[in-house]
Length: 162
Image 1 (tube, rainbow, N blue to C red):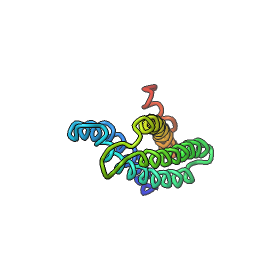
Image 2 (image 1 turned 120 degrees about the vertical axis):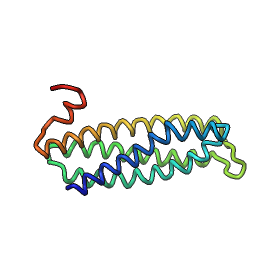
Image 3 (image 1 turned 90 degrees about the vertical axis):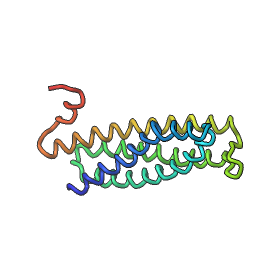
Image 4 (image 1 turned 60 degrees about the horizontal axis):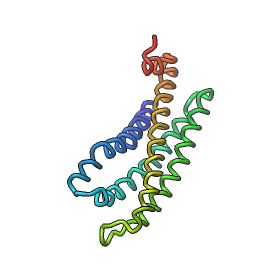
């Protein structure tokens, strides 16, 4: 049980923590250093490929954890995992579509308008993914606390209720 919880926690930290750090720190610093968002986009293309791969591994860990969850809580875990899986599939497809619009030889965009339209969708899906993983985190902490004999403690802590 401890190893399973450790894997869930590390998967969340690596995938969602990596995503958050990249979005909040690396993208602005890279854009400033490289001088343009377009140039930063070539770095982002490679990093997000790795984030997507890490996400597939994390989803497998979350599915494994969901199987070990009490049956009455299992449905909400599977709903979040399946919704995130669908989101990951769409994100994976969009990543490929965005990559097709990059000219790696000349470090420029091939279709500026098409790229930014798809990129907006990619950012929206990434935000939905982050929110789903927040919900998954709250549900996981609540389930762990209930399993350990403290039902509702994680939710009371989150909403500051006694």
